[in-house]
Image 1: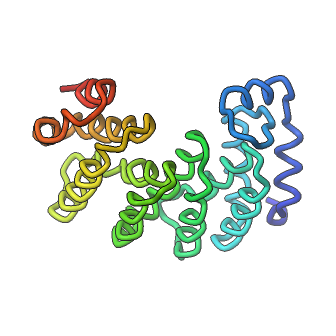
Image 2: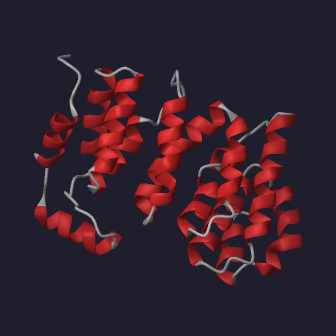
Length: 228
């Protein structure tokens, strides 16, 4: 497999696939001020898979930190993907790194990839919900949004255990508290959470909407009800 990749190796590999035309399109689409390389997601996935096989967990965390700090769009996505694993032991350093990224979120694509990595760590240790709950009170919109996106796995439980139901209710409480937040991305995140939950527990979503739905923006209320 060769030696573990350095940060320089990883950035060189990413930059080798740079497509200036697609990079310009991505920059216009995402609108966040950073460098874009124009790499397709499949290419990032292939590189991350190779790096993961050659690195232990501390090595993955270190490489993810360097890739994120480069502030290159594709490198930040690769950083998140490096840490998107259900089984990651020890995982405290990975969780701390992912949580440190949250206040830096400024666009949905990178935020969503990072939240997917974070979801695995919160599922591995639901006590981390205490830290996530504090995000709902942040002045930073993307941090508030992250509290809902990172907990999306709780909407997909088919046969939740009592403690999982309690955790799900906890997040539904956060969603209710965020209803007065008029930011489009927050309203969309609430709707996303409810829409996904409605596939597995439609009655609970109906009850939630009966109590809190009138406070949502019309588009969010419609999206939340999509599968009811």
